[in-house]
Image (cartoon, rainbow, N blue to C red; front, side, top):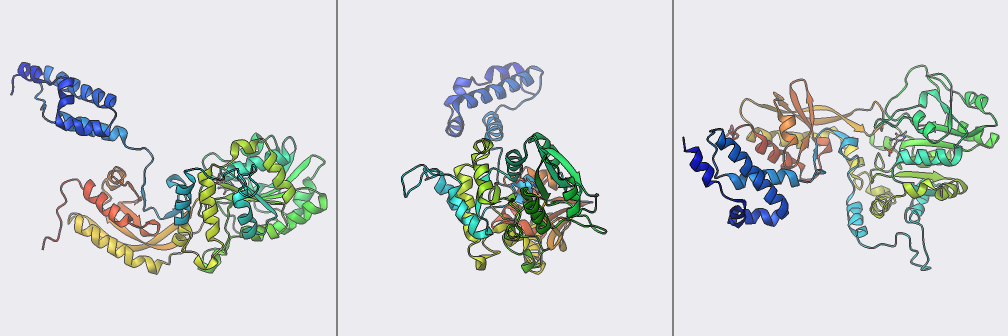
Length: 466
Ligand SMILES: *Cc1c(COP(=O)(O)O)cnc(C)c1O
């Protein structure tokens, strides 16, 4: 063992370390203060270890500092590979944007005519850029947008029902996760909830009987993430709209995940489209931009001109308004829907949801083949059929047949691949680590293979050397 006294004396000073060529690389990448602080920390640790008589090698000092700096300066928000098969995964950012939306975000990063009317040279409104498109696509008289659909609900309740009563079917008092519970939002808006109907059944007459001089709004919500089956009845939008007209009360539908096209076209469960809801006669329909619509996070409200105008003047609108990049991405996404012949391809979320299982078998087999080539012989890698989920509180209780790659034993792949350069998020079931190919984007296969190679416990011993 080396003489600890000598090793201690040989520890370089921070000043000397900063002169070394190896450190120059760090100074080019990281702030000087952070490099100094990290080097000091590494030297202090070494000194402490040498003092206790430990044999601590000093030649990897700069490398150690580099590893620490790398970790500290790595962005927290990063691109990940979604191999979960959950298309609208809220924790992974819901809908991936379409290419025109990406270009639009880049365009909007400079100056844009956000609140400037190019024709008159006067001040304009930021919602104008998407209002005409929304009117065209939904048949509504008017439209406005906010940051997310939770804000839509809060805004419409605040404007139409603050201090008064809102009638909702008991079966539709939903919680959609992330602590968004309709009864709580109602309370926060200052409106009073009046629940009607039984858990499984609600009729128009239940709504009608609950109407008092204090009633401000008749509300219906999409159950989003659950379904009541069996002996059930719900009030149709037409019935609700008719009752509202007869009693001179506004009606609204929180659609949750708004769709513009009939999903049944591609064999998915039928969901009421936004335009169908609008034509039912309800005064207001609100939905998310980043669920089945496949755009950026936004809350979209469409409906009667007078009501939209009131929402636009509400002071909360100033707090809920979208930024220019969201509006640009939204405009671009909505524009794709003007060309129905470009669907589902033009909208990544729709394209993924409608991929037929038969079309996923070959990619799953190809990925399994590539992984088999880099994993050791004890690891079983097989392509097999399974089920994907729409996610995002859309298409409740719907599973979509898919193909996936099953890796057994599951080992520590889930943790290891989360640490990869492109973290790979997938499912672990029993003793298998499962990658669903439905939700992979272009280039993700390479990222997955690279992730497995870099996270292999020991240098991977390829099974086929020939
Ligand atoms: C998802 C959802 C919301 C909330 O929408 P966000 O865009 O996530 O804020 C509100 N209501 C219903 C019925 C939903 O499904």
